[in-house]
Image (cartoon, rainbow, N blue to C red; front, side, top):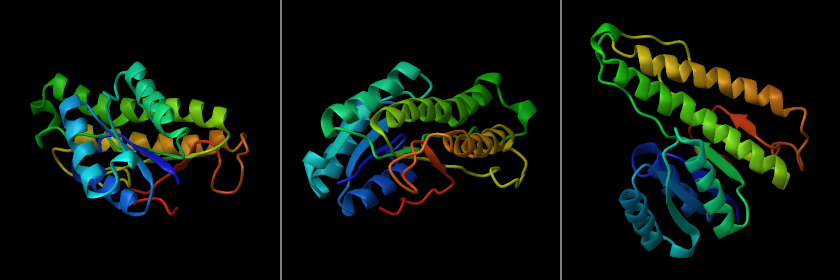
Length: 196
């Protein structure tokens, strides 16, 4: 049974991924910023499937020690992490960049890019130590070069996630894993559940 960690999985796409992966028989670790939310979602997901296969852990992805805590909690409960999905992300209000506050733009960059970087670093270290695993970074508008007004910070952050993902794929080629497609830190471009 594979163990999947999903950051930003208390709602939206992340929660949908958690539900789909539980339905496929995986163990799922739900990550979100608020402890009450992660506990509630983990309880709801567990009630709909099997409580023993779900763990909720509060984690602010912009804080490396909390991301490490998410990894550590997953390993303590399930023994290892097979797949890490960097899904946490936010968007600023859709206004031209000069109308956004510096705090709004920084929050988008911090969560979408720095949070993904923190997750990738933590997962890569753990996966190299355990001998394998996969990382999936959820991209978004801007990752494919599309542009529109009011999305400068968001699109820039997701474009940077694409670059990070490609860089990780190149960097991890030097570290052979147990088999094809199970290379430590293999970075994917998909926002759908990985084939298990």
